[in-house]
Image (cartoon, rainbow, N blue to C red; front, side, top):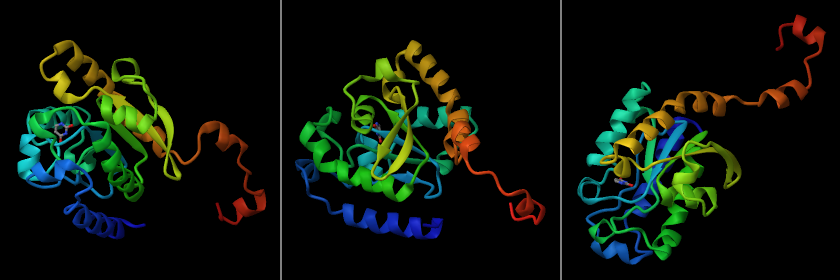
Length: 218
Ligand code: URA
């Protein structure tokens, strides 16, 4: 899918989800917060759920945690226009409480469809909820942050990179320091994830015939 087709597919899917009533959160929302950023991004961030400001504006990470996310991105030479940002839940839980298992179960097809459409190479999960959902493992973020792992999402292998949630790091300087350190590895992981073949596989790949090389075919 080229970027124009992907942008159109995302727009169409956003229109469909705008009227979602799969769980009780639909009753209390101002609007569905679908996701934002570049449809061409290789790097996707997955947060937890919209808060007050996100629910009002319809855009993920626009409050205090979002400002920190912007600063962290700036620190590695990126902006929100270079990445795609979504949440596990597309609707705000009342009082910003934790997502309930049944809300996650209802909403997860939206996230998986977004990932399928975006085809990201690197997915950075922010906090426990996104990390547990996409890794399929119960290990919490304190144990797994900063440890890149390969997961299969849908039909694709994706590099998953768990990070502390910016909202948790906002008021805990030691956590912020770790989050900054983990963030600093993103450019390297992104470059690795974009390589078509790992070095071992590349060395096993069939070599072009010398004659073909001479003909300039490779
Ligand atoms: N926290 C999240 O997980 N997502 C948002 O969009 C805002 C705050």
